[in-house]
Image 1 (spheres, rainbow, N blue to C red):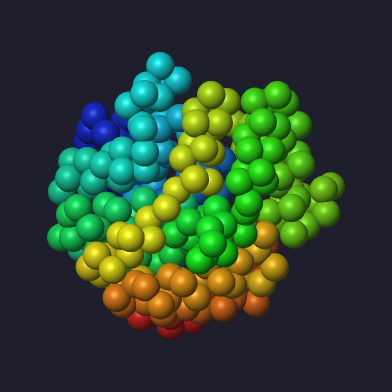
Image 2: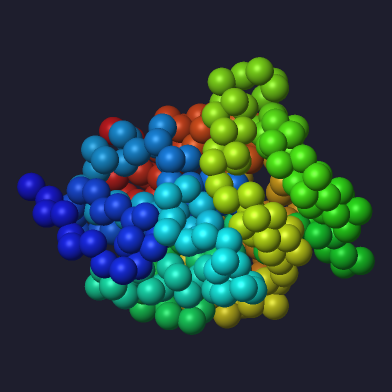
Length: 275
């Protein structure tokens, strides 16, 4: 029987939960526009394993106890990485496995560089080191594309979510998963979402990649409008210990569209095989 840990300040701040027990700890870190509920379809598969699971919401997301007055405390992604490290420290966790979706992969890499002892491996779902195109790099977005999205978020607090969700999922607008992701986008603090979006789409951790001290397994998909193949290839080339696994699924959110398939790959990666 697992024993619920006492609620610590960082657990309360980040709405963190600890589920199950086991010799290995898997920390599940959501991406932009989401919160820990994005893992809901995947959780039953992982809870069948002898793992301790840690879920949380980044500042300004989901049930986190951080309002928009604290935006100035998050000038860059390192601030989000520091929150993750503080949570792990309060929970007295080290050598954890980090299941990181999208921008959380970059946040996790920054955290691992700062405190390598906290991490054993990163399982990165649809990650990128940079989304903005550059003369020597293809990230998928021109500056005009990014500014158009940020302007839409500022002008139409609700409309942007319904436009973006089906595109990033590669699903019809009226599909169940599109509606679920739209609601996820809208559940976060609007001001924090706009701030986080700017940090995400203008992030550039390319120079830090050679310093990542732990193995990274990259799960990527087909037809991902957020992360092109070139961005995946760049990560594999620049990370010291990286390999890429192609999932037979379309879009940026395999945990929503094909949770069973993703769960099987995670189980293989963790050495549990397919149950």
